[in-house]
Image (cartoon, rainbow, N blue to C red; front, side, top):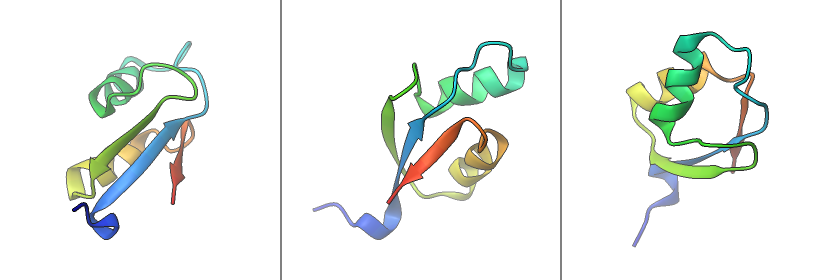
Length: 62
């Protein structure tokens, strides 16, 4: 059984085209491949840091 409090769903809403290399790498590390793609991760400090870095390209699904 998955505990919803410990996971976070992330959706890419903007393109990574013409973005700095580090932001592209962060999106790839999160597993996001294209606009509209949704991934689920455990809520850890490292994931939260990655989210903060690309917050203008993604949205969090509750």
